[in-house]
Image (cartoon, rainbow, N blue to C red; front, side, top):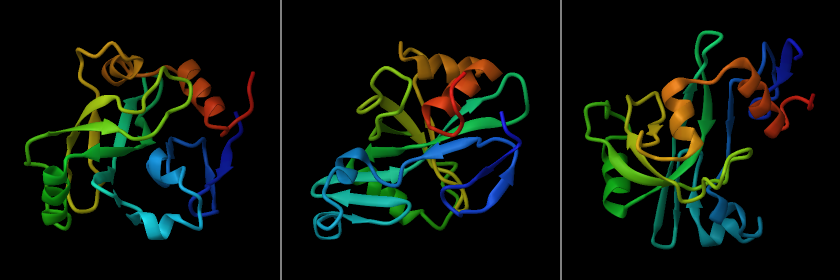
Length: 169
């Protein structure tokens, strides 16, 4: 692995390897032709509404086993209209004391069985942090095991390859 990378978000070079990967929009909205998106959906970097569907940007954290920290998947999550508007009410406040809400992942993540529509739980955070995603431990999806047990460096490298952050073996 190289010792630095160019961030696709800010364009700056950072030391180390990427420790996150995210999507700019939910897949259903990204699939709309670019010139039609602004008229068919309302969105910014954190929130999206497409018809009667509501989405927020979250982080699904996979703890590292061989180093400090975690790998963060910046996924969009579909919420109920009620939970979406509750999130808007507390957007600039500390929502970490709020009960978790049900949602579904709105992006297809590489190198996993299908994640689009995967049921998850969302925990709102403080005003400076994106909500976090918890895959229920009873789920048979590999993300549940990785979130619970963590990922080793071999799996981390496989994720980097699947996202195009580094070349293959």
